[in-house]
Image (cartoon, rainbow, N blue to C red; front, side, top):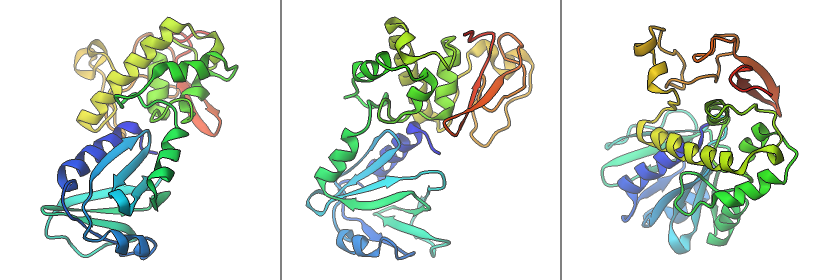
Length: 269
């Protein structure tokens, strides 16, 4: 599932290419056809991301809410647009570019109040300027749930997924199963600041990089990471491989249906 930096990257792209002018909206697949007909020819006022959610604001006409889920993707290109390929839920075309949305978990037209209700159910997003880390801390500091599970709870913290979860805990030497209430408040501020910095890099580059310069392949002689997610990471999807810092095999377990990775030596219980 795409993490928050991907949605913020898309929001910036759509803001730059489509906002402030009329757009053509269609649904070649047909599942969004009625909503698309209401929006076709309207001005897209703006695009924004909140956590793993994307919002296209059409003012009085409503707000398109997109959640990509596990399989959703956007494809972007310059005009002229090609014939739709596959199950295109929504096609957006502006003055210079077009984009197709395929396979999202959600693609729906909401009122402003409904869109605000979704945002209200989410925790603070480290990539948003209006984010309040103390709101997340109040949930974390009062919970017996593991910090690994809390970081993935979108009602606690919005936008953080499996990769950023594993990597930020490693970078701060935090054992994933430590209860939230046992976390030091100073350490939480450091984790929050690190998430903001790492996710901003992700927005800029389009991939997740969490490895310090001294541990990069060009400085250690190891082979670069080969993974569809791109970027260099410490523990994510490195189960059984030597930790880049201490050499201990990276551990793995399933937690709440998701894969969890950590170094038992660098993140002791």
